[in-house]
Length: 163
Image (cartoon, helix red, strand yellow):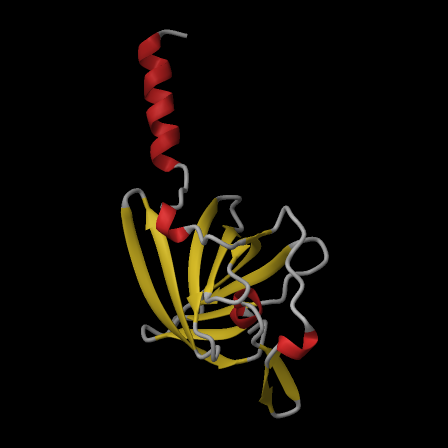
């Protein structure tokens, strides 16, 4: 392969590959490929939602549920199952619904940051950083596309994991 083609391919891979800034990578992180830190039951928090309770112990636990944007999008995140994947459903205001999956990449267990890999129905993936408030009521979504970070703010609606 000549050098010009190799350089072009290398540049394309480097530009399109999701990356995390050093500031996004927490110092104390729990990585999905290693044993997750155990949080003592006494330290776990839950929020009473009528007959259902929602765990607020870690950021990925607080991510689970139904979220909405001011634009009217509704997002549903399920608990991560034993296979390591959770479902992610996006319902747009016009009713269009997209079913995807997500996988935990890292989180700060006592903090508010969680990094997931979104796996879209067409097979594409994207690394997504969420900041979930300690009370589980607000979610900030940071999406990095090339060198531009797009921030969205969502509000917790209820504990439904599917529409």
